[in-house]
Length: 269
Image (tube, rainbow, N blue to C red; front, side, top):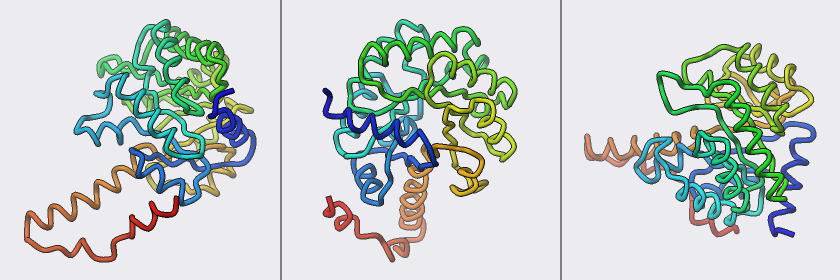
């Protein structure tokens, strides 16, 4: 039995009822800090991780992602979900191979999205998109890890904000074996409710990267899981850039007031 099996079981339990917030660290330090704050599960952010290497999202290689997942999952005691983008492949067979690698890193779950990386045709054709989720499901089953598979549809991210097509895809991903469904950048209560109703009883992940809703309201709509994507990383960057721009621009250091005791937070482990 894998030493991470208990975390996988706990992650499934969290999805079974209620609503939990799964915040997104971008490195070991942020992961440990979020764990100390009491979050019951964490999720990597491909964008936040890319920024630590001076790259933009979707420029991180498969081997770098796999190592990042291994390091973050090994640094905390709570379940970690992997932002695995599109499985780092288009072909379903290669998605199967890559998901097999990810399932062996200690993560408790991973997501597969239908973004192609091509701005002119940003979503995989419907049939191929479903095949890719099927391949990810088979890889997880073959691995024996039982990790949670999340099917993501990226229409609202890539300029195709069609709620009917989004729901059609999410329902198909559920049929293909996704345990959880996710459409990032959904921004209205009506759309959230429509997705929850369409895929029920399977759980829905809601991205909250703007204050259009709170945890209690999302829970009342039937949302089981909330994540924040790269938004915590962006808030960290906001503080860093504000302080650095003040120093570079006017030579003052007012941003250095009332700073957190990070050393004490890390010492709590």
